[in-house]
Length: 201
Image (cartoon, rainbow, N blue to C red; front, side, top):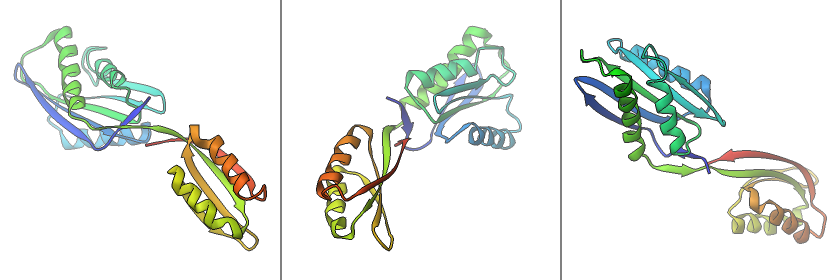
């Protein structure tokens, strides 16, 4: 099951005089992640590197930003994968302290920086949900509202001249139960309009 973050988390490590400032935060997509990375570069002009890793929409990306290939972005990405994160950006700003760490030392430093931030994070499970839209006779609006409340479904209601348009968002595994209940409560008078899948917190 994928997880997102309740709120951004930051941590800092100092290793052989180099500062590694780590941050993990939720992002909707790669474009938003790149905007954050760009703003961090502007905010830290004296930093030697601003490395990042991203898990979003089941896709991944990583950038070493001048560190030896595979020593920064990839270890950070593995730290995110280990936590089953999705829609999460990890960044590490490095201020060089004058002592080279070597490839192994860099991998450990970037891994530890993100792992430390992850250990402080509050994770939120992302639940697959389905959207269902029904046209319901006005006489059954109250019963369907109570049904939505009982199932923990989110409900948007739009009143139309001939019927009530009721848009449900419910956990995917509850969708068949919802469909059956709407049909039964309305005696088959409700009309299914559309369905769409999405992933939410």
